[in-house]
Image (cartoon, rainbow, N blue to C red; front, side, top):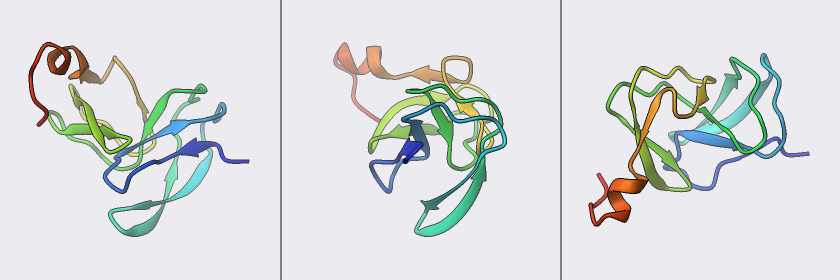
Length: 99
């Protein structure tokens, strides 16, 4: 059974489609090559984790779209959520463009 989904080769996060326990190792294509990522904490269904390191101010990309920017460094395998991402959704909804 699939535990996560990546919809675009642009994505730097994956979305859990079932709960994923800390320490789980997954294999995924990142930047055109197969890499192994160890999930660093329990990831709940519907939540995201980083597929590669994401630096402060870098875009967070899900389903091929920028959904926010990293507010602190995010290591591959770490939970990606409001504690380390500033959403661009409201800004875009008010007429702003993407990055």
